[in-house]
Structures are given as structure tokens and as C-alpha cells.
Image 1: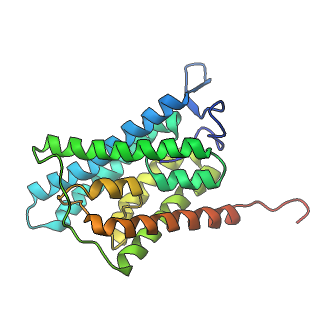
Image 2: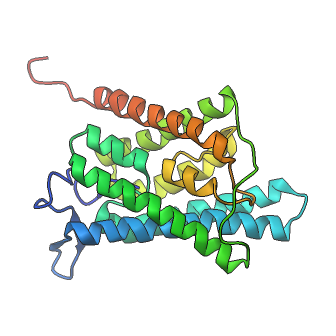
Image 3: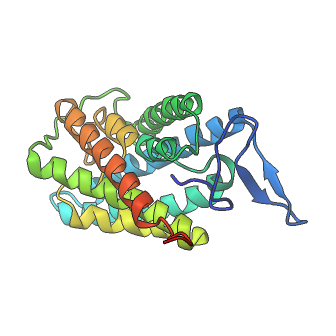
Length: 252
């Protein structure tokens, strides 16, 4: 979900690879585009399997108690984000989110071609994670959500949630890169509870959750509004923080 936190610059081209994990000699390994895309695919799949699966588990163990189910869903999602970013951050940057990739595209840290590949893998990974969750809980693999999440308040919540997520990533990259996995996990954990929409903040997540008629689902008719709001939030946060974090020049 984040640009690689071992480097403040990452995806200039296919020949400029994002740094990978440090080896025993403190050298940085590099990963080609195929491995980076695979990392995005697997990471996004695990994220969705956790989001949807923990929702199913919470609802099953706590029927008629949405608060407890949401709490379980929240803790699992925040925790898996920390783990996935620690694993895949050094490989792909651990975006797992088209809105985050869009932000890095605006910042010229990833090419248009690579961004498109990332988006495809994130969406595909989300769908695979959704299918995995359904299979694990012995539910029909293909479903359509009937969970309505509509209205201006929901759209505003998604714009705010995505703005805050992108702001968290850009701010941590500037001042404390090593904290990104924990900051993102904590932000999403908080977002579940302070936003009216429970902080989807991710177009790939939104698409996958429109195809699960379980606790975490969203009706397909409501998904476009969420996605538009997420894109607006990501763009606004990117430009806002590029300006906010611009250091004063010597001449100033």
C-alpha cells in the first residue's frame, strides 16, 4: 500500500527497480516488474481474504451484534495490513490500492504503463481474495451484495478516508519511512470507526466487496460513488501534501 519505505523514490522505469529487503550484507536487492506485480497480486488477495473472511467470521460468531462483528473485522484488517506491508513493501511498494498507485503516478514515482499493470493486478488480487474467503467459509463463490451504502455522507466519508490514507503514506515517507506499516494499519483501524462508510479507501477493495453478499459487502450500484470519492480523496491529498511538505528554498 505504500511506496517502498527503504527509498523515497521508487518506480521511475522498469530498469529502475524499487529497493528490496536488505540482505545480510546490508545490500539492497532489486526486483523486476514481474515480481513486483506478483507481489501486488498476492498482497491484495490476502488483504481481501482477510477483510471479507473476518467479516464472515465476526458475523457468524456474533449474530445480531454488528458492533462486535465490526470490531473483529477492524482488528483483523489493521493487523494484516501491517504484516503485508512488511512483507511486500520491499518488493512492490505494497500499494494494494489503485488510489495509492494513482498518487505515486501523480508524483512521477511510477510510469503510466506500470501503474496500469499495478491496477490490473490489484483488482485481480482483490477478486481472488474474495473467492478464497467464500471458499474457506463454504459459501457460494459468486455473489452480488445487497448491502446498500449510498448517499452524500457515505461519499464524503470515503473521500476523507482516502485523503487520510494517502496523507499518512506521504507524510511518513517524508519523516519516518520505517513507521509506514504500523501507521497505515493504525489509520485503517481508526478509519473503520470514525468514518460513516467504515473506510473502504480502496477501489480494488470496493469492487471485490461488491461481489460478496456478506458482512463487508457493498451493493454494486453503490460502488461507483465510492470509487469516485476515493479517487478525489487520493488526488486532493497528493497535491495538498506535495505543497505542504515542500521545503523552503535558500532563496526564500
